[in-house]
Length: 353
Image (cartoon, rainbow, N blue to C red):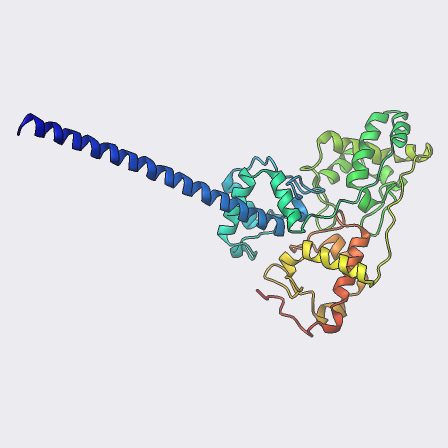
């Protein structure tokens, strides 16, 4: 072999090595690009799944509503997050959403949801939720004036009382009444009997852990220990506010009616809060029974329907909505369900897929 032929063979070999290396780099880039595209698609799909199934409890931007914990910035590992969505959490309103657990989400859908929760910009989620018309109604709160807070701060331990009143007005008044007087949704807190029979530790335990089988959820994931202690102080010393003439504006409940406006509002709320379990037309799914049936509507008076919506049903996936929906919202949902009665089937298949 001449020197020229050897040199040409070496160059050819080097060229092959360079071309192979370049192709390998290109292939690696293609794989990374494909993986990125799959991840982006998973996030998009996960956002829609979140909007349709999770937003009413966890908020449009993952901020958490009421006692439901936030998902933005959650510290759970992917496997634990998957199991929570798939199997739910015992003794909480978090139902099992996996199809093998009686839910409505396939494993691939849960995978996409987990990916979305891990990497998404929650501001983008809120925008997508709004685009789909699924932004939850605002929480029912009592507006506190600065004048009221100044008056409360002037009382002994006024700073703690003001903190407790601020939390109460935002998180508790919708169910327990603006001034702790109680409503159809929850008992009174501003009573001499409660103050004389319950210790601070007992009140703290009830706020922290909730009361199973009732609307009262545990607030340990939503409130700090300091906030719970401040609300406890408020409950124990509410008579001081009464003696000082400090009253909060009462939340006015609108009467139930069957007007087109109320029915339209009820239809919107049903599509937002109920369809994922009870089905688009209320005929039931594997997650919840049918509501659009003579069997249910004839046997369940309006007051009972409102109580079911407000307080939930212990031992089932039916959560309590009283802390997130106003009395008018609940009345509108009831009116919408009642509007089905003339055309509802005699008996609906409660196990309909």
